[in-house]
Length: 164
Image 1 (cartoon, one colour):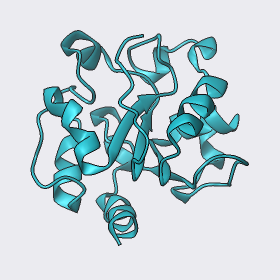
Image 2 (cartoon, helix red, strand yellow):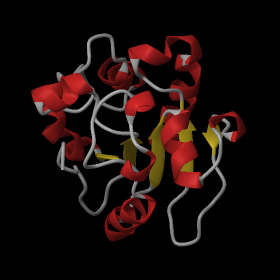
Image 3 (cartoon, rainbow, N blue to C red):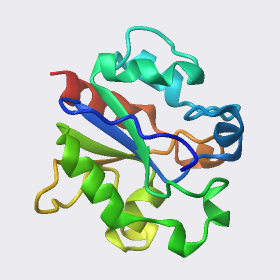
């Protein structure tokens, strides 16, 4: 496992990425890549009360937030991940074991691999329901590599819904 899951019962939100990036794997902290917007957008939207450093990720359950990845045993850029790195069944089991309020994919690629669809068929916002799973939401990727698809408004709408 590259990064430990941050999953406990009673979470409002579990954010699921594709896999740990190279910087995150090296630092042992989620969303640690230079230019990643994850930590700033959590603070900006009010999902966390302040800007956290990547190494402070263990504090997130105190704010009702958990973290995991679809590929737990691989790291690197999405384009470099092997197709067999993704563990849909494992993610379902982990999510069902903690039963959060919502599962939010950080980026279309993670959602696409989870649903077995091309990213072009994945839309931002509420995703199709899966029996036995909490509501699922797809957010624009916070990765610097996904700059062209960034839309903070979708994150703000999600946070408003999650906090309301």
